[in-house]
Amino acid sequence: MNYTLGIDTSNYATSLAVFDTAGEVVCAKKRFLPVKSGQLGLRQSDALFHHTSALPELMAELANEAELTKIDAVGVSAKPRPAEGSYMPCFLAGVSAAQAFALARGIPLIRTTHQQGHAAAALFAAGGEELFRRKVLLFHVSGGTTDLLLCDQVRQIQLLGTSSDLYAGQAVDRIGVRLGFPFPAGAMVSELAAGCAEPVKPKSSVKGMTCSLSGLENQCNALLKAGKAPEYVCKYCLLCIADTLVKMTKAARELYPGLPVVCAGGVMSSLVIRDWVQRRLPDVMFVPAAYASDNAMGVAILAAREAGLWLKS
Image 1 (cartoon, rainbow, N blue to C red):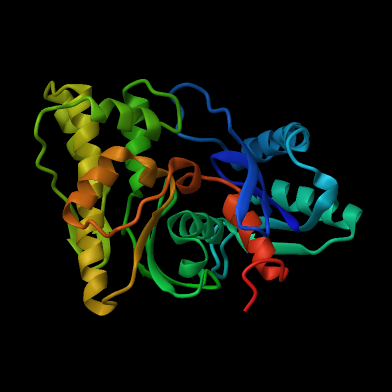
Image 2 (cartoon, one colour; image 1 turned 30 degrees about the horizontal axis):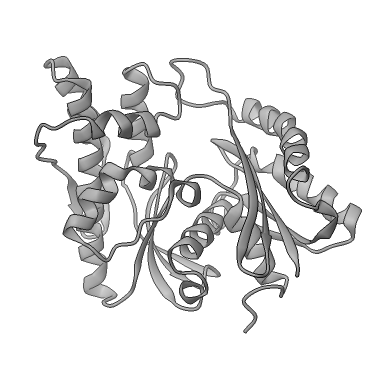
C-alpha cells in the first residue's frame, strides 16, 4: 500500500493530510490562521509567518498518527487557481515544506493548486473514483471565490461563471464580524441562522452564470440598522447565496445538461444553504464540512493520482 502527503497553506488555514492508495484519507490536521478581533483577514506577510510557524507543529501531530517514513509522494497547493498569473505569497510556506520533505525522502513532488485541491476533496467525498473520470459542474464558493466551474477529471478547469464584485464568503464574513464573531465567521453565521424560524424571502442578482453580491452586504446592513434580529439577518444572507447558486445551476444546466453538480468551498459547509438548495435541486451534491472547507485532503489525493499510485488509467 502506498501513502501520499498533502500540504495546503491557504489564506485561512494551514492543513496537512495523508492519503492511502486503498482510497482512504488516513488522517488530516488543520489550524486556522489567527486573526485579531474585528479584522477581516491577515496581511500576506503575517499569513506566511503563521503558516511557517504552524507547519512543524502540525507535522509532528501528523507523525503521531501516520508513519511519515512510508510516504511515497508529496502534493502541495502552489497557488490559488490553475490560471496564469494566479499567485499568493502564503502558498510559499507550503511549497517550501513540501520541497524539503520530498528532497529528504527522494520522492516525487506534485504541484497543484488550492482550487484543484478543493475540487478533488469534494469529488472524492461525493462520488469516489467515478467523479474523477468524468466532467462535472463544480461550485467553489469561499472567501476568495464564487466560481462555477466545468471540471474535467480535475486536470482541466474552465470558469463558467463567477461574481462580478463581492465573493460569497466575503459577504458572510463581513456580516459575522459586524456581529462580533471572529474571522472567518461562516460557521457561526450558519449556526445563528439555523436558529431563525422566521420565513425569509431571499433576493439575488444573477444574469446567466454571473452573479453580483455587493448588494447583499448593503441589504444585510440595512436590515440590522432597521432592528432585525441577528438570526434573521444571518439567515437572509445565507439564503440569498443559496438562491444565487440555484439560479446559476439552472443556467449552467441549459448548456451542460446531465452533468453532476458538486459543491466545494467553506461557504458550502453551511447546512442552511445545503438544505435550501437541495429542496429545489435535490440532485446537487454537498459534502461533509471537512471535505468542503479548506483542507489538504484533495491535494494528497491528487498527489496519489499524478504519481501513478491511485486511479490508474
